[in-house]
Length: 379
Image (cartoon, rainbow, N blue to C red; front, side, top):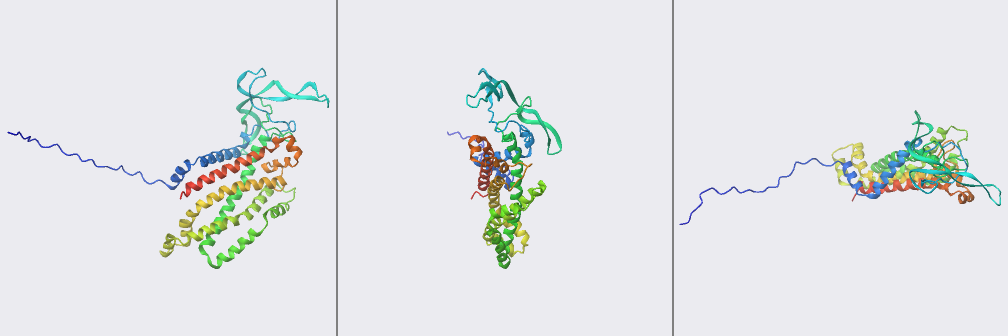
């Protein structure tokens, strides 16, 4: 006979996929940041821009020397070394200054200048140096790097007056970047507002407004820059001259931004969700700010990151010609006035060091702009 098992069958376990509770949607800023981190050029630009802004804000702390202190004119750059005078490796970096030797030049009978290995200048971080006021308020005398005994160190040499080129370039970044950021901020606000309003309302208002924009664009900018900046007397206060330069650059720069934003607005005003918002009775202000402005932001961000290096280059060019920043202010363009003659460039090439700062600034903002463009509008 067959024996049957009367015990109840084991319960059948049915595996069901239980989804974890949602943690909520990522914010728009979080999505942009996640996309930006995937771009190595964008991250490189972001890091460089952060370092440039840090250098400009804390310029007195970062600069190794007082930019107004004088030393030997046109002194060559001092190279950092990890070897003593006998060639032995040492852990603390140092530089060796120049000194007159006992030997004489057979032609000029002048003492031959050589490296002074007997008196090394030890280097370190957070060293004590020239006094300054942080943010113009807090007295301090600490510098990020320099010689431990307070002796002058010229990593990029000196200019014709014996002033440290590296310290002047670091201090000059404050003026150059301040002019660029201020001008681009004014240009962006005015250009974006005028472009969105003109493209959204259209009609006769748009026609007349665009004729005015075309009138501004028709001015030859370079002769106008030179003519307007030359109207200020040399004896004018520094703040007045600087404000006038910013106003002139802003007044001639917003028109191109407004044309670009107007073109984007004309395309967005015909999209279905904008027409639906008009149909339900949404106000013009709400449509512009909630529907059109977020969609033109990707273009505005790219335009801003491209405009900042353009203003830096323009300031450098005008400063080289003597029509931007006047002494005692320091800017990269003003420093390049020392390179006006070929003989100076050939004999003292380190005077071109501010060009390196300009190139790094242009690359940093362009790389950041490319990364932000792909992160804000990946499609």
